[in-house]
Length: 91
Image 1 (cartoon, rainbow, N blue to C red):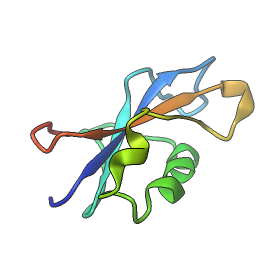
Image 2 (cartoon, rainbow, N blue to C red; image 1 turned 30 degrees about the horizontal axis):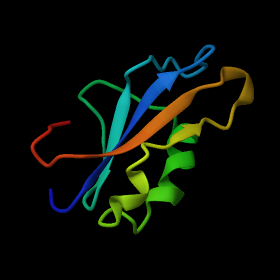
Image 3 (cartoon, rainbow, N blue to C red; image 1 turned 60 degrees about the horizontal axis):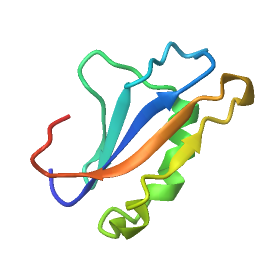
Image 4 (tube, one colour; image 1 turned 90 degrees about the horizontal axis):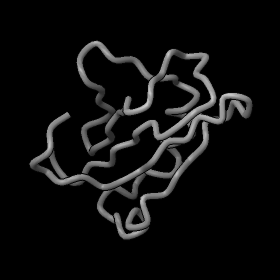
């Protein structure tokens, strides 16, 4: 894996129709999308994140505030936090 990584972590929710739990995450780097073994993640939630990270992995200044994003299903009120992570952390 090369370059920077962005981690998207579930922060909070009313409920999850996709069986996500607080603390579930996925990571995006120059090589693609990664999740811990055996974990799945809602593709609608992933689809919310990808346009924001596309082409911006090396420009992580915008991630300094660790922005929150909401899944597109309003009743779930599922919030995800984005943050740049150190190369030494593992998925």
